[in-house]
Image 1: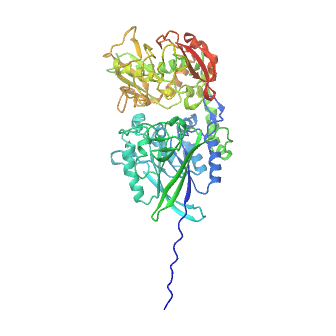
Image 2 (image 1 turned 135 degrees about the vertical axis):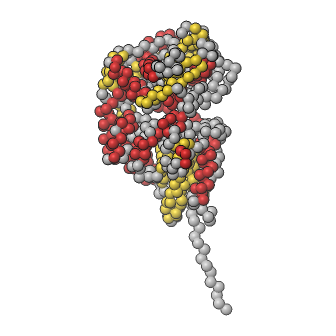
Image 3 (image 1 turned 90 degrees about the vertical axis):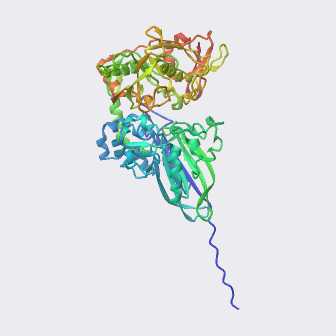
Length: 620
């Protein structure tokens, strides 16, 4: 009788640990340098983040490095390269060169990649040594998409016993569909799809192509849990798409996981989960590195995620990576030489320390430039006889940029660097045709930045910390008061929240009450006109005129012609009196030199605010 032969069992596959590193919203902050203040930064810059990346790679055997978009624009380096595109024929774009050097495995696009036009974008991306993907950026009229919707990365990873295992990692990307409105030059060249609609199409295709796990690079913030068609900040509903194993969020420059999202619907801020899916959002400008540790277990057919850990690592104070500094030094040095060129003089200080609570000479300058450009452009048109108003918001007012993120230009020479600090984005000027009713709601939307104030109660913060400063528009050419006893009419997303209340009172034009049926031309920027901030009368197709040149170029031409400027902060808006109620206001440390601007609010220093800010007490 023959002895039975036993067949040896295949060894059980042990878990694989995969560390996903994520950068997002770098905005060309490669060197740790504030180009607008012309000083070294301790807290920002991809060169500092690079040190974290190298350390993380040394600590884990299996590492993937991904970027979540908005890397081509944000500092004067981007403007310098865009103005000299011939440089890209000889060398990769500095942002691309940096990611090539760091060994990024894949990346997606953000909305600001399109600011300089599609031709420039194609030239910049041509130097990438890594795949770029975007699932909801489509070709127009049946044309070929700019990028593939996904990539399957085949990686040989080491399991817990040291064996090499082949894992197929699918990476896809999504961007805000609003790019079609924010960059109108894209019309006829590309189009966009709703983020969730695109995800529901692409994820099954990735699985069918053999993806063991799927990572979504979502250049989209953590917003409402309920999906709305075309929503800008769709990370929470995106997490509900079956088959997504991890999400890198971005766009809003926030930090996740962090206590800021505790209690947010669909979010577990402590465990770093969105809808049960591990996720990170690593701030902006290289402030943080996102880390998602995934434990993968093989179920006999494919690898699956069985556990995760999400966290952020802060780059502040770390030594910058010298190789990265050297690789991008030519563009950095050329940019510094360019922005240090004087173009005019200013007789008055131009600063943003109080631009969110009082009329500002800095905003007056930009508003005048917008107004004059629109008025001249509409001469001889059907709209020539309509009054022209100008809406402008401050851009550098602390917020997530910290205590150093303020414009503060002293009297004296005015350089290109200073003009960039006055207006840091490559927006164009737009003219909108609006009614008095729309202008009234425009101001109500902006007034949502203030907390509701109870008269006489102590210790109340004036500003709502969750409201971005760049959504506080003031309209030059009107006069009004803001009654802070009332709740805001609109919420942070621009949706009508309290239809029975109004904060704007005494609204006047030319010394008379503004009527809802009056018609005006409003000068604003292309971001706002396209729907950014969800203001009334804005959106795709809105507007009767748009400048060909960016606002900054028109601003530079204006001050060159003037030679010497001295804009004055006209007192055209104020707070309705609240019986001397004292409120608290935080701003940058340079504000102490400009307290005369707040004489009408009887500002008094009140010590230190959070994160290097200074605090003042104001009497309303």
